[in-house]
Image 1: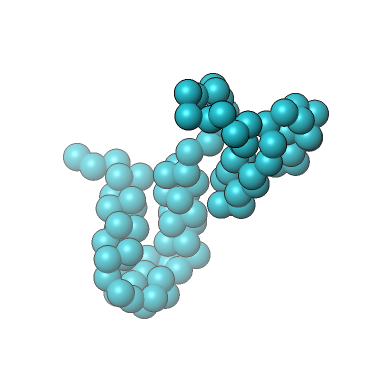
Image 2: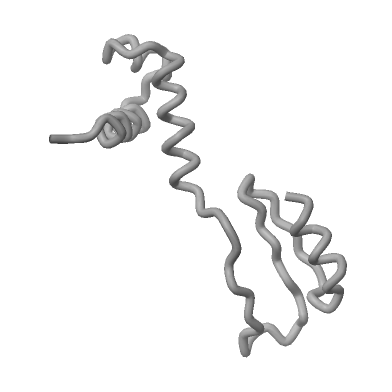
Length: 93
């Protein structure tokens, strides 16, 4: 038996492939639009990676450049030598 969460995530996946608007899809499935939007946000939040990742200097990173990618997709490229700046940028999020 499928849990409510699994059932709703399956519906979200079905919606993403349907080509319908969220409102039309939820109406077709007999779900209130606000409930369906809640499950879409919940699935999106779970699908996005979060937390910290280990940063190591690889053999091909001789340039000293660093790329910081925020969960919202914003990318910052900077010189990796300024550790103070990097710390302030990480705290921004």
